[in-house]
Amino acid sequence: MTEQASTPQFAIRVKDLVVGFGRQIVIDHLSLDVRRGEILGLVGASGGGKTVLMRTIIGLIPRQSGEIEVMGNLIGGSQERSTQSAAGRWGILFQQGALFSSLTVRQNVQFPLRENLNLSQALMDEIAITKLEMVGLAPEDADKFPAELSGGMTKRVALARALALDPAIVFLDEPTSGLDPIAAGEFDALIKTLQQTLGLTVFMVTHDLASMYTECDRVAALAEGKIVAIGPMHELLQSEHPWVRAYFHGKRSQMLQPQAS
Amino acid sequence: MTEPLLTATPLGDVLELRPGGSWTAANGTTLEALTGGVAAQLDRATTVKLDMAGVGELDTIGAWLLEKISRRAIAAGHHAEVVGLADNYAGLIEELHQVNRHNPAPLPALNPVVAKLNDIGQAAVGSREDVLAFLQMLGSLFLAVVGVLRRPRSLRLTSLVYQLYRVGFQAIPIMVLITFLIGAIIAQQGFFHFRKFGADSYVVDMVGILVLRELGVLIVAIMVAGRSGSAYTAELGSMKMREEIDALSTMGLDPVEVLILPRIIALICALPILTFIGSMAALYGGGLVAQLYGDMTPAIYVARLHDAVSVTSFKVGIIKAPFMALAIGVVACSEGLRVKGSAESLGKQTTTSVVKSIFLVIVLDGLFAVFFASIGM
Image (cartoon, rainbow over all chains, first blue to last red; front, side, top):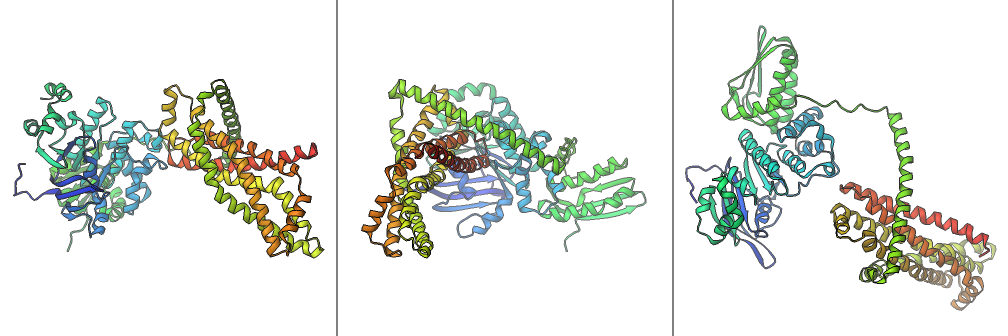
């Protein structure tokens, strides 16, 4: 971990986090810092606790011990209220989109605006269309219902909803899974563009090696409940940890590397 | 003192706007009012100059409101320029400059009367589809039964027994309770009113015939429609939503045979049994009221009952049960398969299923009444 003490600009700080279900410990004394404005990719084995870590940070899963700080505010624990107020500062893209199925695309994107701000309907409509166009959808799609959308469109709408309040942090849970490589590439480029224009911090759980090469500033590897390696992609490729080696130097990864490097 | 969010300085034909501070969602309401407030001045000036140097924070909402100011000026044929923009926000402004350029024409709003008439028309056409869906389910059920008769091993016995346990055995306590109370209430009302004419003893005839011929089966069928029919619709509907039914078809299995046939057979077996148990509970409830409220000993009650009702009354009630079960099952399953992708549609189909099956149960009961009357039962 190469960390400059002179930059206190951390979007998320996790210290000594322990999370478990019953007797099974999923996250074991994990510490992780996410810098402001970076795209951090989190990799790990399936069922290894990536999603659990993400859901714990956003307060959906209770932790057993440890500290979580998001944008300088402690999350959860005795200060339940701070979790509430932090809601406006982060947006979450769930794995399956989690769009409200009884609302149209436009209403889905407007939902956080309507609940948190007191804007006129006309302005909310314009903002919703703006967000939809920013994520690459046409205004004509605004009146569709989630059941009428393709997988890629669902993810885009979910991203537009996550971005509705211009959060400082966006959590993405496997954003490119289930998309074809072209759509996945476009989605990666989109996240990169939005990160640059809006100055977002992106915390991304992913298995997509191509996204990690092209998009992530740093990649963190989660194994045995701990972060075993963190750094830019080229540093992770040098890592000596057996699981990290197996992940990045396995057969499937080898196939991708010549094009990427 | 915080700096003002927007300062407007008219200099002849030039309007200089100086946004300052935090142009973000948190101030959204104020910002919207402020940008609306300068609209009049905006229309008078021929040149609008946006000096962004004072902006501390900017997000999409703030940037969009500023973009709208310059768009309004340009649309009126005036000149707009943006100066002093911080580098880190240039991308955002540039991005917003591209979006919201073409708006699809909003759908023309229908005249409310026409819209209402349209709804009625749609519903009329839709009812034809309802009938077709019912008939289609009945047809595929018949095919599945033929298939099972030809290859008896293809009947899902485990599933059938499990469904029978759920819709039959587990329903017994609530059915007994409800029918017991209904029997007791009828008897109480009978004694209260018949007493005026000194016709106390005919209460037993009324309770016996009413419960065995009509009420026992009707109450039980309505309860089953609410309890098990809704469960069938919700189960099949969520299976449809999660593509489980499509998965079955692609494996070469017939969803009707695997999922629906065991459910409907279970219902057809369970409803007569529940009707029998329910009718007995209602008669017992009536007897209890007769003893406590009507001063009639159990021996007299049973003797009167023996005279009043015949096996025919019992047969009339119990024959109706399997047909009502079939109607409930077919409606519940066909509504389940009509669930679309959304959670709302699942709720809608479940409601429709219960309403329709209760309606059908009552219609069937009426048809049977006509039928039994004409054959003299």
